[in-house]
Length: 162
Image (cartoon, rainbow, N blue to C red):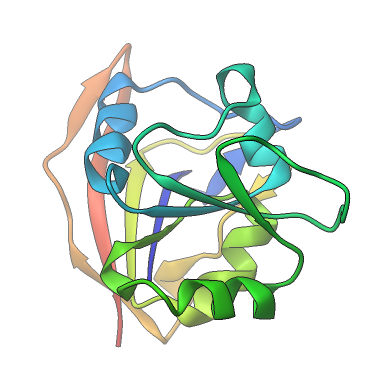
């Protein structure tokens, strides 16, 4: 399984349920990586999409504690174990963990690759991704070319589990 995330230098990913920046190149990267594959997310992440609708051309798996929650075009599971059992039907290379913060932390132990759009700035936030740079189980595999958008510098980096 793989994780796909956009994180600041201090590993910040969100504040008050919103993203910290808008990077069209990151949205394009996300779309290219995940289209035709499985995306795993929490309910709040699903709700943050336009109209709260599942992502098109992907299999959307939503982890929620709410047993009554349903959303057309998405599959619901209610625990990490249930999600892992459901995902056994798919090639791990087709599975992308897409957030939010709690979902990233729960599924990180099951992933071997992390695609990190690294925004080269610290942000004030209330949601953070685990610091892969200080995690001895992970290493930076490749650092992408430095790009900019509206004065924000970023790169598409890949981390691999050792």
